Image 1 (tube, rainbow over the protein chains, first blue to last red):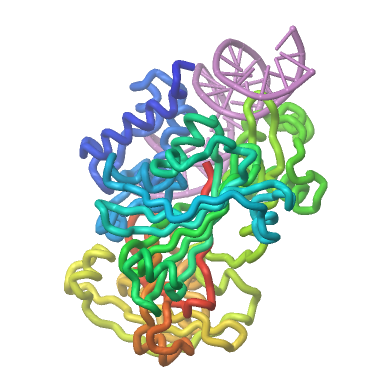
Image 2: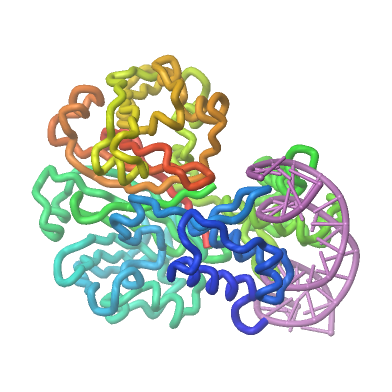
Length: 239
Length: 239
DNA sequence: GAGTGGTCTAGACCACAAG
DNA sequence: TTGTGGTCTAGACCACTCA
């Protein structure tokens, strides 16, 4: 294969046609046979491209009828704040908008709870990191992060100033594959008051997360806490 | 086709083998060629079944290596409260555990905001519903729901006592296809205090949602509010 | 009935992991 | 080098929508 599979290249082209308005919302796009002919591929390859775009919420298909461009979803348009990704904050905003202040950076042995979350023995050290992420210089989210040292022995403060995810991908060459999240509302604690410009008793949105690699190894357990009016967590649920 | 496609039947069988422990966590399952032979189907059909299970987080594949059963994810096991679904509460719990108290059931013209969310003209009436859902008799979630009358002219209080989703599916024969959600933390309001056993100033977890049918028509705009310690919202994010 | 998307096949070649 | 999963094909049949 060239680099990306055909179905992905085709999906990119179709996505462009949708976003540029060549294919209009709630209108039919050409049928799969026609597209297969246009792109010079088999119909199954077109189907796979369309399936991907349907998963993204850009298209929907009706058996016996055709494939339509999804009409705009009001909530999605209103505030397109990105929170689906497990790619970290840095990837969600333009270069330079997100900065980090390291409040704590320690290495220690894991508690029982962390041993369970990260599948570690009690003698395998973890990094404990507390970072305040700032958006355009204003406090945005307070991140408590725990990661096994053995997976990333070279982690240091220079890395923490930027994106941990970029470091994992580019330097350590770890492939991350998934995350499980639990979202709560709770009271601000002392740290939130200190760093997030919260008042005592303010609600806080907390995203608790376990992330793992493509072989199923957990590599991160974290809490991200936001002031109640600073951010929402958005989910698109198809099918 | 019989009823379900082959890949779905095969996925069900594989799921059973995983949950019963016949396939053990972090272990290889038979390769696709072997499975294709066992089930008497082509390899692509096996692949499709495996892809589905990978999306569910039960399997993961490594090119050049094999297909493994996903190891347990700590957060997922700890509290398996169901919140991914847009199928409503009734489907998430056993028969009889969830009951409803109708606090308000009106029909009126939509506000500008609702016109936008539900893609309605100002002269197209909506149902406005306020329901308290109880779990085992205890207040659980307060649901503010807005739905276009034209899509479900026969909606009445008897339906609201049970599941709106079951009514849409079985009686009106509408197929729901997706939802977009925004999750916030905020202060309890007067209604929360009155119905959810909240104190004033307590944090509340709110799920704001727009749902639509398979033709892209929005059919529901809702807020669901939970007391901060009553529930979390869980998300599995693969790939 | 005509035309659409959904499924499925039998085979092929490629990319990749591991010995 | 061997064996795995990922992609892709050319064609077939089916289920469904709509006129």
